Length: 196
Image 1: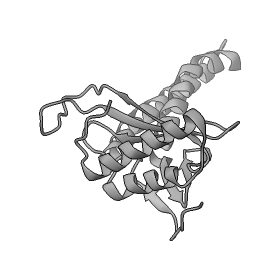
Image 2: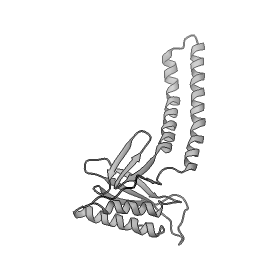
Image 3: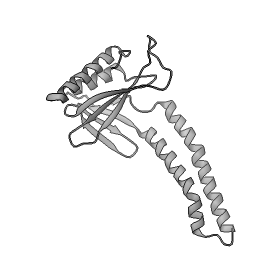
Image 4: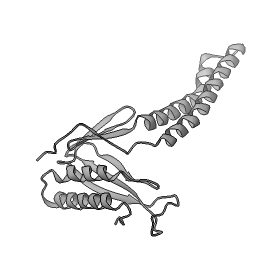
């Protein structure tokens, strides 16, 4: 059974605007400093009589690594997004796109204690909650469903639960899918539900 689709549903799993701005503000000085250092090293090597191209290349390696790391992290945060079309979830990264059909995939939830001081209304700490999905022979994808300060909106949690329930599974995969979909439905009704 497939879910009727009215176009892709954008899932709220990407980085917040604040995180994106923070990543850019952090990357710009490091990348700028690294470019200035490479330029200074190049000028110093050219001025020295015994300087060779190998000296320049060895000295600039750490700065090139810094540039690559900060640009990759910034691009990853800026480009990360997920959408669901029917029961198929597409997770777009900076350089890759992964797809998984939640109706056919093995799905499970995992929660981890969070590091911040965020608490629900009862004073209990809210764990990070992740949905994992993997089709047979495919790559595993993960979606962060709840973090320290926010969780996916109820309609997105219900849509994920509906996509999981739309497939036919047997054995342990069916039991895990039913538990996962049930917890997603409970979370869509009450975001403060205790996660086992």
